[in-house]
Image 1 (tube, helix red, strand yellow):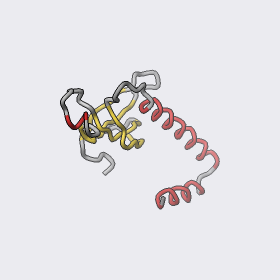
Image 2: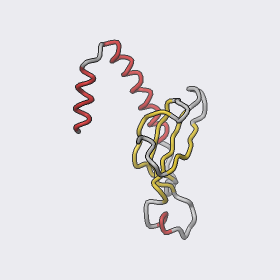
Image 3: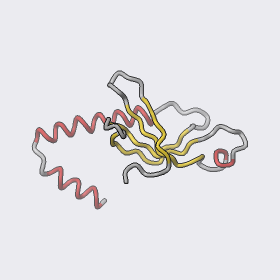
Length: 114
């Protein structure tokens, strides 16, 4: 909550036009998150999202970073049948343009935000 209070204080300093630009960006981020995380669920989902953060790809494009547990699909895998699955692993999702298919890339276990 400490970060949220700091963030609110920073927002109070913005002009109306800056807030309107920020509002548009927030709407885009919400839409991107809902597109990625609201995929139809099957019997057992292949991935379980632990954390989602907006950011950029290594090449600088806007992206959604997600920390996910992944299921391998092997019927005798104990991590998948008993536990949460393998991971958690970082993936990032982005579009080249607004009409392009959503792309994803595996990042690994290390935190991309550090």
